Image (cartoon, rainbow, N blue to C red; front, side, top):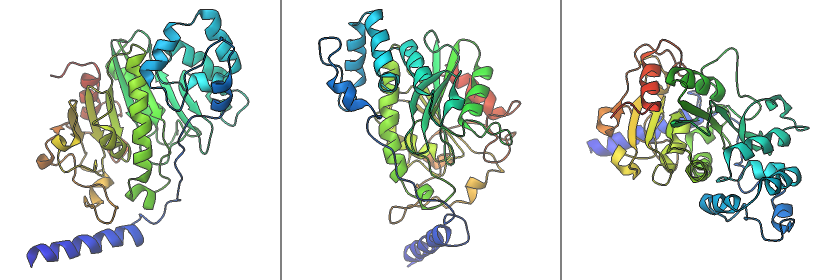
Length: 342
């Protein structure tokens, strides 16, 4: 009877949060952007090199890396000239080539504000997706990837009113704290929820994002980068949880997480070390850690029973303050990014 009562309470609480005044009804429904970028068909049909080019839809990052190991510098330049958007998004292609291709791809689009930045991936469809590099990714001894949560896209890499709550702001701060030997990628490579509506309560966007994150991390290692540490904020931790068993990561760090769609850290199926942080003032603590009818994301990763390594966050403030300078959470994140913590 007690268990039945708890179930009714959980159902009622979830329904209230999702459909009522608690807030999960205020978002706008989003459709995930998936599949290769525009121009992929023209790329696949191109025989400029006298042989087939790797199919963006089916070639895995290792195959892409092997292809570019066989091309000349002149051939690479010609491919970038003819297909900048495709080359810039081929996971497994050389880092320098992707940066050059995306510098050309952003010109003349609605996201021309990205010009002059180190863009490792760029998809102009929908609200836009982007991955920006901070540091020297080609020569870094350690690499980290920031996976953000709701309300970010290629049009909002930064917000002056919330400098450490956007992908670029978080990545820049982490890279500064980690030092010159590290590179950090701000990866807004999936369609994020807008607001705290049903999209944020469900796993649909996270499932699509997880597929893209798995491919992106595989592309980093195929291109010769070290295995990355993933720093996953808010809804981004749902993405990381769903990708954990297949993403090529050495550490998995979640902060301000509503859950990872797993009961315990060991259920993630990853060899990466799993870390969690939640500061006392973070409003995410008010979101029920339940799963019902496909809504909610499960147990709190920062709870002792989950089994993640706990990161101190007493000096962080609010939901987006974990990477603010002077916080204990940023100090701990930087040590993990540098690979110092065993």
